Image (cartoon, rainbow, N blue to C red; front, side):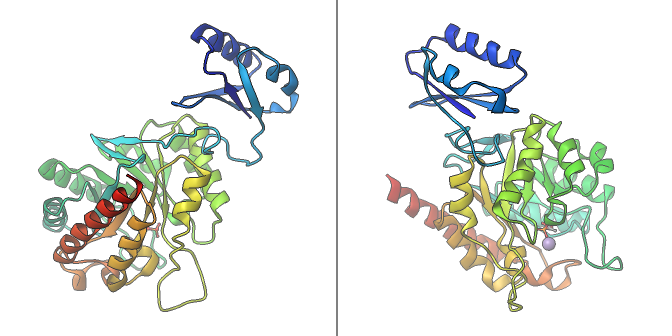
Length: 337
Ligand code: PEP
Ligand code: MN
């Protein structure tokens, strides 16, 4: 339920109403925008007398939220959420480009890619340490050593890092990680999501292979219900019947998720297409569609990559693409001006 507060309401009146509501056991979310002030209520609102609340002096209107996700709902929080990652922002018009290899392989590899993507203007470094592989015989990632090497690359370049967690037991090693990624296969690992909800660190939540938008938002809700409001949604392609591409990039995710939610939405053109030649056109399309960022796989030697070389850009190709992305962003900003 959301309670729309009249503009002339004083802070004391709003506090009085908030105390009355929290006294009844509701969780409260306060959102003050230029146009309206909104009190979002989480809990079983069926026992609240909606007419009584509507009749209060300072209340403009009361609306029930039909959708099962509340914290992630734009009705609850009309303004875009802006997340600050070590001084880099995402959301609300701030675009974030994340680049790096699928997996951390060696110190030379991760540091070279980090240097190159930084020089091209990337805002963050990606790299998998714990890898969810379809085959148990495939490279599983360097695990703790991979995290250590990411920290070395971070220290050398100053780029914040994002990497995937597969199990909550790995969390103690994630101290130096700036954004924790929940991969597509773990989108509905609810125990993991609940634990990540206890943190106050940004979470990059990828859409599951067979997940609807509502299911993705419900997974974000699991994290937010614990008080961690820093969730970045990521479309990484869903399962279809086409075999030419690895997955089907559902670019509608950008306008749909941004309509339903205030959370930033990014696109992963690498896992969604599975092909390096499709990464540039899909990245540019994502930027034009209003995405808040991109996560792109870049490898210093894609032919020799231990994982996902086929979809990885070379640093030179990433450099060209980054300049094109910036041109598209300039163009779309001039549309709205
Ligand atoms: C990844 O980003 O390395 C990854 C495994 O992605 P996804 O969970 O989208 O498959
Ligand atoms: Mn990969």
